[in-house]
Length: 142
Image (cartoon, rainbow, N blue to C red; front, top):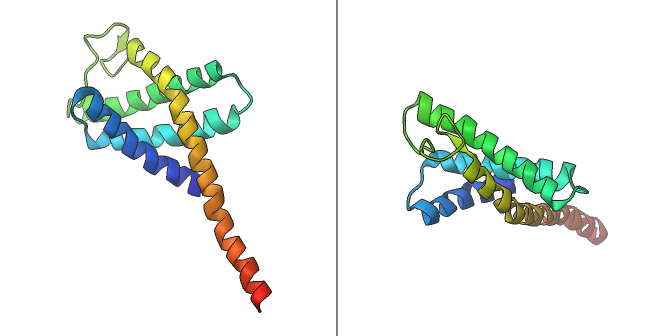
């Protein structure tokens, strides 16, 4: 649970920052998308697919991010009509919410996302170990 929380916080911070750097603006829904993407990438690519090749992990990450982007895009852009993004002018798009060029970008960005998720995993282990170490110290002192 700690690991997923750390990944969500990291993703919900980084995704909007990357978007601001890329296009000069963002929307709060991108924080939700980023958090979900990092949690899913950690669970699927870093843990369940741990022994798979990097290319397979990147393909899975690209599919996960594209799926999250589609679901959030349909809700935010099509249902709520907030017009946060529109890929209609890009090739091979679906409802203007996802497109092949961005799925290719997600493929590449899965590499650093996996590395960051792994760091969150190590940090989570240290956080979990700290109270146990304190308990051992307390029982020895008594």
